[in-house]
Image 1 (tube, rainbow, N blue to C red):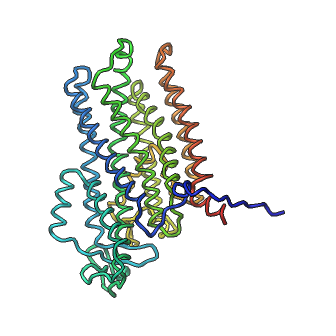
Image 2: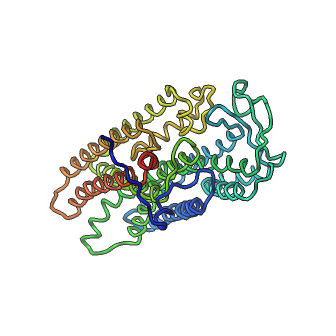
Image 3: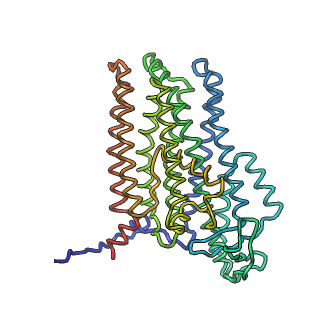
Length: 436
């Protein structure tokens, strides 16, 4: 007996939130996500700078000033280095399916502003501008692309890297299609830069600030006083949590947007996915911070082993992936001719290992969903172990000793709820199968 399938007719107001965004058109929601990302970037960085400023003038936290500055600046330098390298790398692009081409060369003026922006640690801002520019241009023109702006196809079999290539024939696409390709590529590049920036910079900053707060909050709570430093730390922690969860959700959106075989996310899907990652990242960071206050050496060993294992798994995925097309959907800076022989893949795997310390960036596919479920079960086991060992070292008679235990349980239940909402209501693959 065949099961009955019912197609619900959604009210017009819900269609804006629940229907997937068009993959080939830069729309209002894409503009809003860029503006939200830009605002969140400045909110995050400025809040961290203010935390460092208040720490410098606070006797209780002044010895953490240098650590806070280093955790802010050093990751930004690393991320801007990746971004500048990828700008150079983008002179040679391989699409899924084997077609490779050269993008138009940037003018000396463009390179001047790119280098200046990266020296000022504003890689993300430059890439948001790229998205806006290419996205708007992709909607404005349908005339043939200007000769100087056309992409140049090259033979990937006779190419060894970004600096070499044998031209075959110029692409005779319209300027709208040309800018659409650049927009989709800029979306993925920007999402990757944001993901690395938030996880490399925000995650250590969160652990440091929560570590410091675990000592200052009890004393100030007993005195009934909240210092300006603590207020700024709370704002910084909130901004970092939002930046981390938003960047992982935006990464999944960008990959799906640029890959035609994947259904695109809807606004409601992006929001529910972001909330899912928020509820995964928050307890993990909190457990890391609290565990480190009692077992600092063991914390370094556990986190270091976790990171090395995640890095090794990611690197082996790049080396041994049987499907290069599927691989390049996520690792967009790999040329098919030997991606494993380049050192940048190892560094990128190391950065992805940091991502897997906190959450699982599920892009799509049944195998990744199974891997994600296994990851979250192991993550829950790790969190419960760390919070239990931390609690055994406390007196257990104060209200703030019970609060982390409750929060870990609450965040786990919320992550299950938001994850179920995403997969059964807003996941593109599920909706496509359901409406078939």
